[in-house]
Image 1 (cartoon, rainbow, N blue to C red):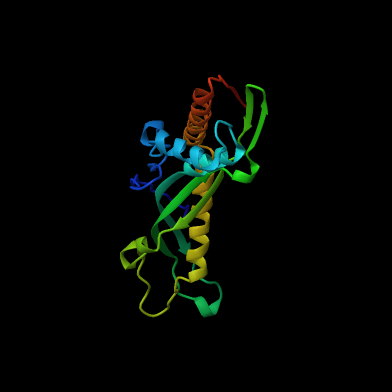
Image 2 (image 1 turned 90 degrees about the horizontal axis):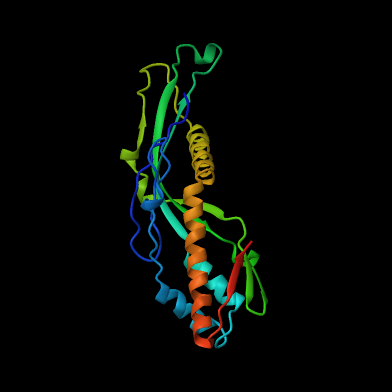
Length: 216
């Protein structure tokens, strides 16, 4: 049986963006909102950068603030197939399903961000985004796991290894879909760019310098 995935949108409170997806439908750009304000970006620049000078350290700090976080409701499903041979005679295939929530993070490795300045021209290069995820333990409980009943006599227990393989497959499929979701990745990039541009614009306003930003 093929793995199936169901996804739902859960909003994260605090500092990060929340997003989600539904089956076979990628998240729409409007489902993602920026929760890092311009004031927060300016505050970072004031604390880390020497007065009136655009600094790479501040750009990196702002990128850390602009991390995009999503909560995905995932469903891993699979089959514990009946064994072969006389010892397994009478066993039947048993389907199972494991539901769980994942916190997915789209971020930029700050050590790979590059910035070059030539007078009033500033060139900035953002690296490829990194996608990481972690399962939320509180989402895994007795109600989140279901399996077909076994036979009374010839048992075919569902192995932890079988469940683990199904979960790994579901995780890989989820990450692949995120990487193929150009609108979601573009939203993450636009958020980082907007905050960086605002920081540089504020520096320019303080010094009456109009910087030209080139993204590469």
